[in-house]
Amino acid sequence: MADPRGFLKVRERELPPNRPVEVRLRDWKDVHAHLEEGQPFLKEQAGRCMDCGIPFCHNGCPLGNLIPEWNDLVWRGQWSDAIDRLHATNNFPEFTGRICPAPCESSCVLGINQPPVTIKNVEVSIIDEAFARGLVTPQVPQRLTGHTVAVVGSGPAGLAAAQQLTRAGHTVAVYERDDEIGGLLRYGVPDFKLEKIHIERRLEQMRAEGTRFRPGVEVGKDVTWVQLQARYDAIVLATGATVPRRLDVPGLELEGVHVAMDYLHQANALVAGKDVADPISAEGKHVVIIGGGDTGSDCLGTALRQGAASVTTLAIGKRPPGERPESQPWPTDPVLYEVSSSHEEGGERAYLASTVAFLGDDTGHVRALRLATTEYLPDGRRVPTPGTERDIPADLVLVAMGFTGPETEQVTQQIGVDVTRRGALARDEGFATNVPGVFVAGDAGRGQSLVVWAIAEGRAAAAAVDAYLSGTTELPAPVSASTVALRP
Ligand SMILES: Cc1cc2nc3c(=O)[nH]c(=O)nc-3n(C[C@H](O)[C@H](O)[C@H](O)COP(=O)(O)OP(=O)(O)OC[C@H]3O[C@@H](n4cnc5c(N)ncnc54)[C@H](O)[C@@H]3O)c2cc1C
Ligand code: SF4
Image (cartoon, rainbow, N blue to C red; front, side, top):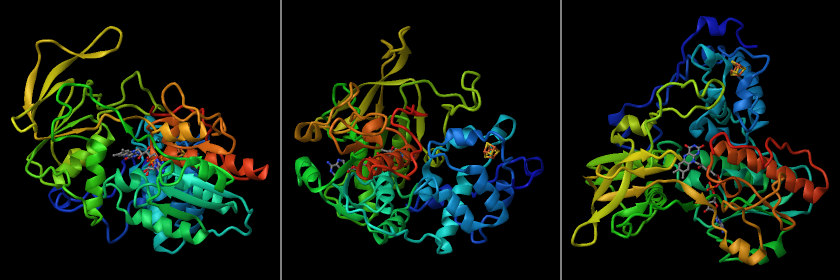
C-alpha cells in the first residue's frame, strides 16, 4: 500500500492546470499545461489510494487495470515497475490517460465521502514518464508462427488487436482506408485533446515489433473481402461505427448543414498540415451544434479555435444534474452535467431544444434553425411541444447526434458476415462472426462506445484469434463480447 494515512492527510484532488483559455484558443495544442518541474503533487495524490480489499476501481475499468498496484509504485517512484504493471493490461495508456471519461474514478471507494483518487492523471503520468525515460521499447516476438492476420480498421480496437497478435508471433497487417493510421484518434478527436505525436510514438514501437501498416486501402473496394480472406489465415473487423445518425427534418439539404464528422475530419487534416479543398470553416459564422456529447464538444472547441462569431450547442434532453442523484449511487458511472475543456472556452448550451426545421436564404444556404421546447411523452418519447417554436440564427450547422452502427454492405455481400437486428456486425461471446476465421472488435461490434472499450475488445479478440490459429492462447481476454457497456 502507498501511504496508509495518505487519504487522511490529503483530502483534496490536485491535477495539472489547464492552460489559460485566451492562450489555448490561439493554438491547437493540448489544453493541459506542461509543468516544467513535473507534478510535485503526484506522489501525494497517488498516496491517497487506500489499496482497497475490494478495489471497486477495477470494476469500473473494462481493461482490468491494476490501479492500486501502480498507485503504490508511483508513490514509491518505481517508474519501470509502474509502466510494466500498466502495460500488462493496457496497450495504449497514453490514449486512455488523456481522453477516457474514467469510469474507474466514478467507482473509486474514496469517492464515497471524498473526491476520488486522480487515477487517470496517475496513469498518463506513468506512460509519459516511461516514454521520457526510454522505457517503452519494442517487444519483438521470439518466434514467428507462420500464421497471417489482416486487421481492418486502425482505431484503438484494431491497433490493440494488431499489437497483441504481432507479439504472439503472427504476421499482422493493418488495413486503413484513411491516409493515416489511428481511426477516430487521428481524424475524430482534435489535437487539443490528443496531440497526434502520441499516435506516432506508439506506431513507431509497433512497426519495430513487426506490425505492417497499409493506409489508403479500403477493404471491400480497393481489395475485396474475398481477396483478403484468401490471402490471410484470419481477419479482425475493427471498422468502427461510422454511420452517422441523421436528423430527419425539412431543410437538411441546405448548404451549411453538415455531419459533425465531415467537419472534424477536415479540421484535423488541416491541423496536420494537409491540403483540404474548400474546407468547412466556422470563421466569422454563427455555429449551431446539434448534440451535446463528446463529438459536439469537440466541434465546439474546433469552431472556437477557427474564430466562430458564436457557437450554440443544443441538447434535446434535460440538463443532467451537477451531482450524483440518488438514482445513480456510487459505484455507478453517473450521467452528470459535464464541463469539458471546450465548454470552459465559450459557447452557449441549450437544453430541451428540439430542432423542427432548417431555414434557408435565397441562395439555398442555411440562415436559421427553428426550435421547439422538448416534451416528454408518457411512453418516454421526446417530441417538440406545439406552439413553442422560435428561430435562432445559424450559418453553419453541425449535426453531432452520434452513430447508428458500422458500414456493413460490402462485408455482408462479399463474404456473408451476419448483422444484428440493431445493425452491428454480429459475433458470439468469443468475438467470432458466422464466417470461420473472421472476428469483430470495437465499435463495429458493440456500437458507438469508448476508447477504453475498443482497446479491451481488441485485446480480447486477439486472444480469440490466437486460440483459433494456434489451438491455445496465453493472451489475456479482459472482456467477452457480451459484456454490457458501461455507457451504451
Ligand atoms: C469526435 C469523437 C470524439 C470522441 N471522443 C472520445 C473521448 O474523448 N473518449 C473516448 O473514450 N471515446 C471518444 N470517442 C469514441 C471513440 O473514439 C471510439 O469509441 C473508438 O475510436 C472506437 O474505436 P474502433 O477502433 O472500434 O473504431 P474507429 O476508431 O472508428 O476506427 C475504425 C477505422 O476503420 C476504418 N475503416 C472502416 N471501414 C474500412 C474498410 N472497409 N477498409 C479499411 N478501413 C476501414 C475507418 O476509416 C476508421 O479509421 C469519440 C468519438 C468521436 C466521433
Ligand atoms: S477504489 Fe480508489 S482507493 Fe480503492 S484501490 Fe482503487 S483507486 Fe485506490
